[in-house]
Amino acid sequence: MSRIGKQIIEIPTGVEITLDGQTVMVKGSKGQLQFTHDPAVTVAKTDDGIVVTRDSDEPHARSLHGLTRALINNMVIGVSEGFKKELEIIGVGYRAQVSGKKLTLNLGFSHPVDLEVPEGLTAEMDKERKNVLVISGIDKQLVGQFSANIRSFRPPEPYKGKGIRYVGEYVARKAGKSAAAK
Image (cartoon, rainbow, N blue to C red):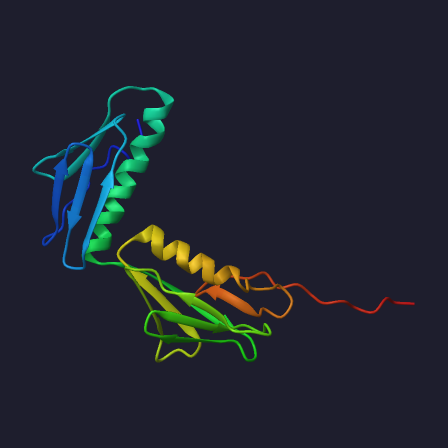
């Protein structure tokens, strides 16, 4: 039995969940999300919350049991609290600028990198911490993917530590070249 899948999803106050066949709709104060699950698992609403069960012990059904529960739980958390990722931009002359739905990154290339912020996400520079970009939204997968795309333009390098990293991310530093002893 899946340890994640057998846990009951608690529904916080202000969150409304609608089950329509294989479609799960979650509506909260921050927005609305929907998900269509595989027929190998069953989603039911009880007094305690949402219960995800599987119909058989086939490997396909077993692999989807915990996944379906985690996706629905992330939807519930997203519409009630939201998700955010913080990216730290480190390097001389490296900076980001947000204007509306356009994100401009200056990362030491000969040209600025312009990105369109996807629908449902917000990007803003942290006012207290210099060079920290905050990506937030209700869809956990979308927040994580967009943050990873931004980080991929200049991942942190191990010698000087320059690049874009998540706040709190540890980057193993390496020693540079040293002269050979003669």
